[in-house]
Length: 369
Image 1 (cartoon, rainbow, N blue to C red):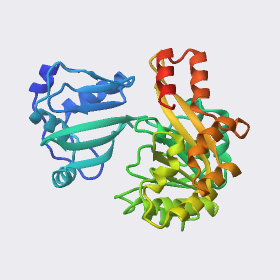
Image 2 (cartoon, helix red, strand yellow; image 1 turned 90 degrees about the vertical axis):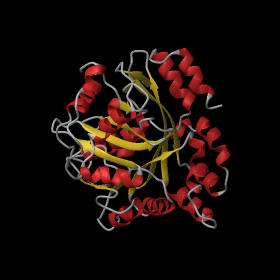
Image 3 (cartoon, one colour; image 1 turned 180 degrees about the horizontal axis):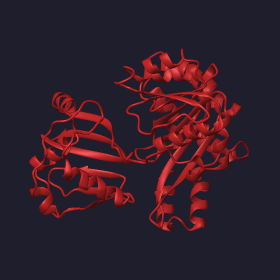
């Protein structure tokens, strides 16, 4: 990659481009940044006015150029990845989020936003294909979910904890080992799944279907065995997903929540007044398993997942129905024979392997008390 001075001084190739997620041509500066990010195993690129170009590497934001980007340069770098249609959309809404694929099979999730009147961009670098489920090194009991015929599997955690990666790996495992009809509804599509043993239809919100809820309703008319929903984030999606899981479809989804015992409260936060009881009943019948993740940096510069597991036993279902969610953590702690585990078990294993530091162990464990 050229120096920061060279990068800032060169002329950009303009804002023209094509529709959809195909990148516009003549963008050598951003190509250099993307190539360097790939070479340095960065997970994200931040283009921010008033800052150097930043890469997120091993969880930390690191400057990779000496020169600070002014507002004009940050805008030109951001616009160099936008087609004319996307620029028009951004200038109308001040936010645009989309996927971009390059001929070398590199894929990126791109979000351009306006902040304090300035144009900034975050680029998430995506693996070219899903990680095999075995590579995530989750507890063995998780692999049994691939053979489940119905119910709801929720992958939970805060932002950037690998929820989408785990979801994609579960889909890939089903695709490799089962003969199923799999339908995904995503915003946007992050991982492409070619048909293997299963057949997969991937639908993107805004391009292939108006909303998660509409896409989910349509999926139920397509003889599905498995439905994967990128995120549970509105009442209609939650209600239809729970109904589908209860009536014989395996539903996989993610949910932003800080701890596994907050799942019920998070789902109910989307529920209109008067519908809480119905959602509790549906969730009690539909829930199969919740996997709560913490994606942790390892001492060798890699990443490992620490997780909590909640399986829907009779006791769990009763708590969900009867507003006893505050007792879920004690059930997880005592439910080892059902495959459950609390975060301390995962952290103990990772520390004993020597892959996380004692200070990180104490930090994560302390946040669960």
